[in-house]
Image (cartoon, rainbow, N blue to C red; front, top):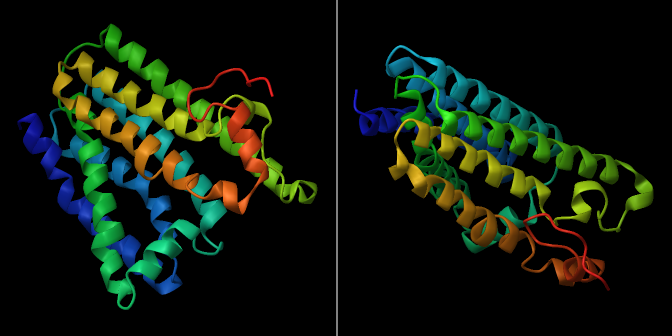
Length: 258
């Protein structure tokens, strides 16, 4: 099977998972639950590529293990955090702009869109899993970068969860640990993960899949990540303005002098 056909083969099942996610979120009146399913879309894609692709070799198995480690960790963390939480303010704003009938519109505005975006992001996974051959330097470098990204965002998420669990920190800005060097260390970890998967795809000769990590970078920096989260955060949390002034938004770096 050609790589492009293999890549496309996951889209129907990913769309089916989007339908399931939509049904769950509609029952719970919380479309923010789609965040839990984001990484599961990509794990499903990787599993489909292994099933329909050639006999899995070292690169395919390495990719599947890394996707599973990233996906299950992230989905589990978000489920524990968001399952019983109120709908995130970002999704409440989308809901308000699209009422009446948002319950139905969210099927394509939120869940269908997420499935299609995840499918596009999955291109390096299809290329890596569908290409037989021995591991190369790019594969090793990519695996190291993916692993680093997983560890980095895991530490950042754990530090933030511990900070929020302490009632004494109510209303305060998290600026400790990795959050001292970047306002969004979890997003930086995601950046590393997807450029790492692209490096593995490069080992398979699939340089054309570069649009995947570029798309993820744009999403993280300009659309659904940093820009959206910080759009009005200074108004809602004045102390965050000082944090912005002294801390890099994305790439880690030493705090700036006041």
